[in-house]
Image (cartoon, rainbow, N blue to C red; front, side):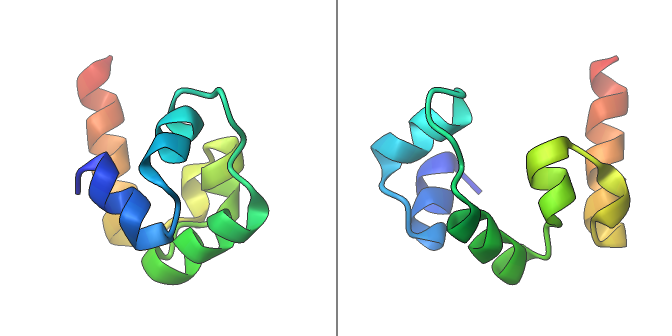
Length: 70
């Protein structure tokens, strides 16, 4: 999913989402909660990068992508 589409799905305007992605603006808890409800992405992953709380299919994908970067 492209960033612009993801921003639309979670209800964040595209300009703000770009700033969130680049670390110039914080991801507010209500938006993180919406991401969790829609995609099952655990708050510990969103804020801390901890993989263990993700659904298995997503955890595998993230692990594979991180392994390829190394």
